[in-house]
Length: 489
View 1 (cartoon, rainbow, N blue to C red):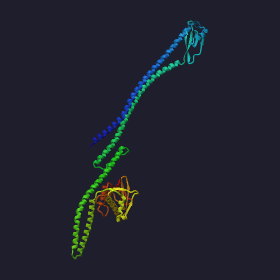
View 2 (tube, rainbow, N blue to C red; view 1 turned 135 degrees about the horizontal axis):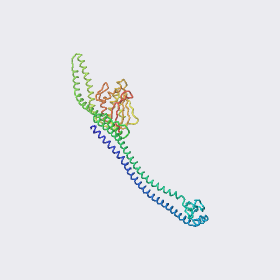
View 3 (cartoon, helix red, strand yellow; view 1 turned 90 degrees about the vertical axis):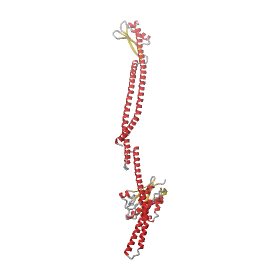
View 4 (cartoon, rainbow, N blue to C red; view 1 turned 30 degrees about the horizontal axis):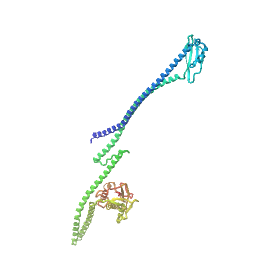
């Protein structure tokens, strides 16, 4: 796929993720804004209706207070006019005030004022509790004036002012509530806009993070398909994408290992076919050659000692080489005729202890078994052949290094398999030799065909296990071969 097409695909995924996050963020915000708008309108309408109703009640009360005051004023004026018509009061007779005050229960104070504004006489009594005296002056015909005071409720003017202030406050509250609802709408709108911007930024960041990791997986998959099996994703973090990347890398590791095992088995299969053919082709002429040489040596009747020696040496050489060829043929036959694995549960300790029955191994084999018994699912004869080959190679390696050639076999169970280690006292295996040591006809020993380890690895792979050489040397100083075999469930 071309770079523009890949970029378009990644961009499309980013846009989809951003759009999805934006929708998720806007739906509740828009719903909240709508509900707040509706609630604010209802609240404003309710406040307006409530304020209007309260204002009407307050205004009626205010009119009632004012009418009461006007009525009091008119009543006081009527009383003052009536009293002013009294001739004695009109003549500014001080003696007339007390009888007049006694005859007027609604009046609390009477006073005569002369032309100069001086109080000539007065008569008064204490007003009833909770009242105060309010006075008016009424002119008299003879000059001067009559001051008449009547009790009125105390604080009437103050209550009137408070009532007027309450009406003004109710109107102000109604206006403030209406403005407050509009402020809520603006605030919610700002919150919605901020949420949308935050959702877009978060969506872009999340989309880039996700698509970048997905692109890394795609790139590695393409690299592997192009023939780069060593490519890996290596995603860092602790989220699901990191787990996916780790699982993808594990899968690639398993595929690489399985591909290596399959290639190895295919190579061994080809070598098996060649070994079968060679064993057949080599074995047939060996006996006639051996018989012909033996006949030539025995049929010479001459007296020439040099000729006899030459024939005897020739016979020995031919016998020795035929014996070597026969061993090679036997090895070829072993490689070409390996039986199929017939796995069954078997105690591992029994197999290892059977190796000690061989006198050559009995004195050099060291067994370190775990406390608990371990059962493996294996073909007993084939697994014994693998271990015998490894122990025999270890003995030879130790002896070639000038040591006794002791070999230590130990094992430990793991999750679903057992790990068997075979340690020798040899010189170890170099990195170059380690890369090819399991190939057919590759050997580090002075003698040998180089097929033993190849056969052992093939048997291990057919059991569903592995056979490798550890990079680190064994505790005994030589090489460590690590064999894994599935546990019996």
